[in-house]
Image 1: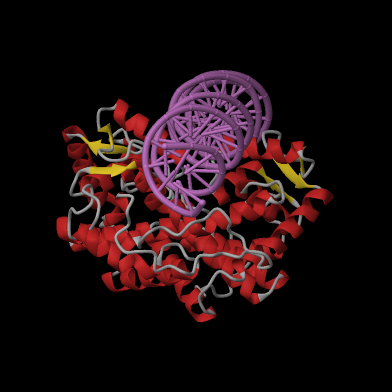
Image 2 (image 1 turned 30 degrees about the horizontal axis):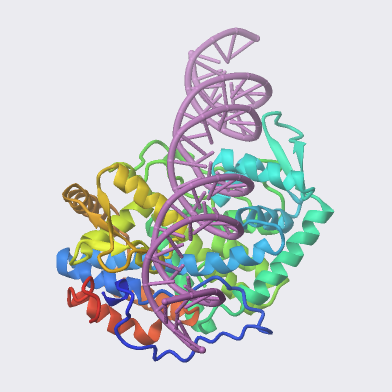
Length: 218
Length: 218
DNA sequence: GACGATTGCTACGAGTTCGAAGTAATCTGG
DNA sequence: CCAGATTACTTCGAACTCGTAGCAATCGTC
């Protein structure tokens, strides 16, 4: 595998990479392309040594992993400009979406799949920055509500616009292919029970329409 | 666009009977399905508040994120059974694949996209467990080679078989759809310059064709 | 109603990640 | 042969993640 040794095999036919970054609202600065397609390379090795089913599954996982790395790097960079981590942004964004401007910590934990201890930590940080407040739940003394502040809402809006413009919009692929990709991943997630398929549509309707959360009950 | 039909907003608790402890002892134990499809739910909100391009891009990112979470959870759990983290396994697996059984730390960093400081940490840990050894590079005193030990190779094999059998094989989707998914993600990665497209094939050939590496040249 | 089980959250601590700075070796262009 | 730039790796420190234990409130059942 060549690149291991300092002297790369083929000379630098690359004339390209003279990045004159200046005006493009680029979202990635420290990101360097890997020397080759790790998914394809490992898939070939897997095909030699293991069975085809394992190889294709490995390729799926690796492709998702590398895509995730590519995107989370861009997203994190943008969030850094707003003094946020992605985790803190995600919570803030869901709070901003909520009709009541508030969510219980346990709802955040379950829905965004963040361990309870981590949610505590995230809310601590957001509260310290004056972006949310903790409010006792009106009818359940065990429960704490996170309420977004005006400052938090403003930041959520700004950060979202930034993300939309620099990452989500220019993410690549046509609308058609984006849709196909999301569908395939949905099938994968259904197969892995990533969410409650039976009740999902119904719950989404509720979220979109009204509370159904503060009042609890399902 | 995934599915979703109009669902009645009110939903009664219905027969919650199917809840019970019938958790399949699959690869995920602590993993609980989210209450709804977060991708679809957030996509709808984005469509209302922002433009369609941002919404579809957000859906792509979120779908990848949730899929990643689903799979990394399973993978991490399996690795835990072998006293490994995924990061340590990944390095070990690439070392096991290498014809020379060795890689430079900088190659690992660039290829697997792990920051240098993290590679140091990972190798420290692997070395402490007797799975790899650090060896000075024969011709470049700046460079350190990580060499996999017999013990490391054995563990890599065992862990890989475990992963193949419990995660990669049963990952879901037909071979056909796995292939489509990998292709779409490859297009996304190309668009985001996740790897060096121009030289990838060539480098992969070299990897596959063995040696000609430690000796440098090619 | 009472009591054990469950749920919601927090405190603590171990482990991991990784930017930034530092050291050493190599390469480059005189 | 020699600066200065570059590359390779490590050290240090700050931040983040998250399992576990613990506490408080509520629920479920008889």
